[in-house]
Image 1 (cartoon, rainbow, N blue to C red):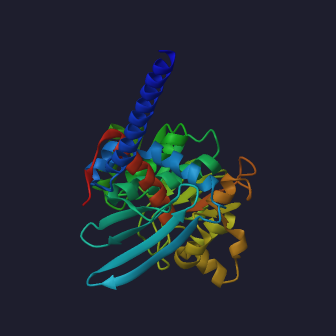
Image 2 (image 1 turned 30 degrees about the vertical axis):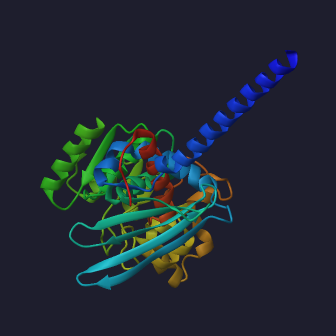
Length: 350
């Protein structure tokens, strides 16, 4: 009887192991369905993430900047019809992802990000990326402000009130206790409207300024967010200790700050030097004139990891020339897709 009991017990254990193994197998088989490639719309992106999420993502990204498996491919432009087709790509080794962003710059723009797994090359998702781009561009300025602006910064001056402007302001307000925002655009109605939008959305006092100089004169942090081909910011407007985010111009023929602003800065930063050599007009002009060396420009990731010095004292003027790079796009896209799976947002791609 004891022998029979042992046999029965052994059979029960074997059956139990078989069921457990089958359940695990079924779970593994079911997993890919939960991780199917997703298509996410602009509305989905707005529901899933905000500027604080993007700042945290970029801070984590730039902390792994030196990973040899991390690569950023500068933007390529092709003139098509009345617009421009733009293509940029990147791979992030730490996150095991790679991808691209493609957009057509006409009629408000059409933006898409494709994200892939570097483990097996599978597509993770396709994202409508207008809001993604606005948020991550703002976040880059937010991270630069966190790293470079004086801790007691309270006044923000803004030149420009276009599609990218609100997320710029939101990102700076996320990292510093901004009490007043002063706004200037060439059109008085736009100044008034944007100031009201800031107050309504961010609960921060915002005032329209009658000139760019009036908006900037006593600012602790400055944002330029325009597509100007001529400088909209002059060095003689800047007070001691200010941090400047030049965030609008991302093409060689555009420039938002004058040469003296660049030369007065004790820190001249950018997202990616290789892309700056192609697109950062303010830096390129001075290098070509022999007044600046590329060694005088540092990457945001090197400041974050301590490989390059940041602000040395409260009187320093610091400058971040934002270009918007693909590596920022794909890192943020990875967070968006992970969050979409967690919250059941988006639709599976065929």
